[in-house]
Amino acid sequence: MKNNDQNTNAFLIHISAFAGYLFPLGSIIAPLILWQTLKERSGFLDEHGKEAVNFNISFGLYIFILSASFFPFFFRSFFNILDNVDHVDFGIDIGSGIFGLFGIVSIASFVVLAKIALIIIASLKANKGETYKYPFTINFIK
Image 1 (cartoon, one colour):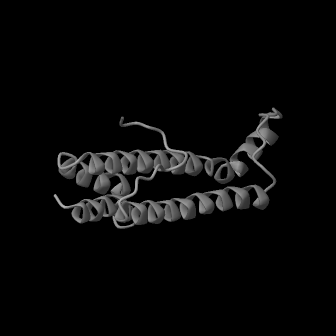
Image 2 (cartoon, rainbow, N blue to C red):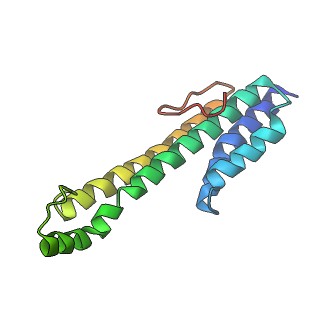
Image 3 (tube, one colour):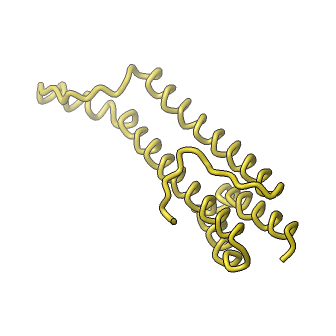
């Protein structure tokens, strides 16, 4: 395989993560399928595929954790009602109303924008034939 073809395929592996905006879990499934079909062709594609899949699984996990942190804000009134009825302090501090929720939304927005930027950076580096290691990635696949 030509070097240019490898670069293009590595680019496609990284950029395929945007499929997550088209269908659920697409940011994991699309790079995984491309990596599985192309990994036998070269070590370069195998390395980029592993990195892309690990990154997308890691950030999927991070987004899930951030999403789970929204639940206390939705159930705040429920906890307040229970606290007043039973006169029991649950010891749950979920932020100061809108400012706590705004903080979580801001963090979630930053994570999503960072993911988009990192995917673009990795895609461009792969297209140039360079390797790229995503930050904050858990190595599920070694």
